[in-house]
Image (tube, rainbow, N blue to C red):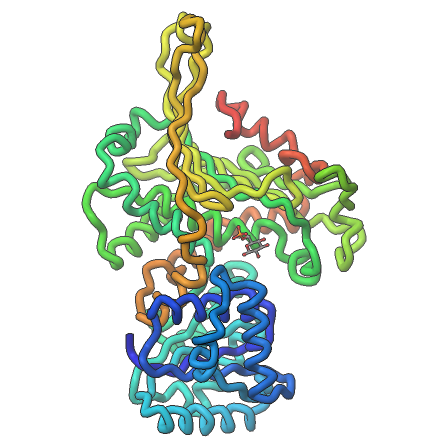
Length: 481
Ligand code: BG6
């Protein structure tokens, strides 16, 4: 890995504390760091270097998956410096340039600069422009930009943002984070089928009945109403995470794919995703909002009673849809996706349901369809459901074959992503074509939501979501798994 400067905007923010410092620490423990690294943390608060080191230390103690080892902590922290910075002030950028250069010469680091924007979305554009205007991106080494979601708030704003960023960074230099792509089981999808002849034999148009992708959450809107009440599940989860899961599931290819081919295939999948015509949206899409309910025997307020949510907000906290990928491979096989807050369980999973070609007797004896179950979060496992006769030898009962990963040994999504960005590997980042095509698919649905052209189904907190989502599958003869 090249020696580099890692410039972190938003160094005292929540994401830095929860994810970025713990990820860097775990990479450091595993020796996945450059020999010489300068981390420059930027924020408006007037912290001293000592304050900054204490913040990092506390973040590791609270959020690192490994216990902090005091014997190497100082060495780890020695890379970190704090710089007081106001993103809207030009003097700040001039000071930053001098600060970065001083550390580069102190540590004899080439001008390789990685800029991580962990900031409010409205700051992304002005920061990129100011980095350029102040010559900070004008390096003799490489430069890279990491940006967090949301990347725009609709097709138009995403295109505008991308046009502005690409004035400063080339597409290959932009690493758009979708943390679902950093999850180990999601990274596994690309190579799950090809080396497994058992799965490969099943993985065909003739055998698969449908694909179901669920990302259900137990948490509510929490303290994020300011953002979420405008975004809704559709922008927060569907346009990015769920559509990335659709792409990764549909990626299957007989030969090993190079990173470039993965990128091209994902783009092709999005191009084949059947657009939802305006008059058909209510047939294929369900939106919902949680109402008061109960979870773990505790009363839970409804969405409209949450702090910061607008009175009478018709924002979606639940989304389900039926999708079709019109390519040779997936033609006619429905993909169902759903996500929601305040649901019964936290679970991100992909279920492949196989066609159930049993005769009438077997059907009467209770044979069920076979399933391939891929759990992404909180468990990481792959399982199969098959039919076995019960003790009476007359009835079937489903048997489960399951392989679970040891969660303690699994890296956090941010570890995988930061490691890749530092190496310059962009496979598990959202490329512009994917982002743009995802917004394109979502845009008519966004408009239908905004025009209130779709019913907003209430569902009780702690339930499985609105009944309308169940009906979506029942119409096709299926149920959600
Ligand atoms: C984030 C969303 O991107 O993903 C959150 O903004 C959501 O609203 C989170 O809770 C879910 O991530 P995970 O990894 O817990 O499934």
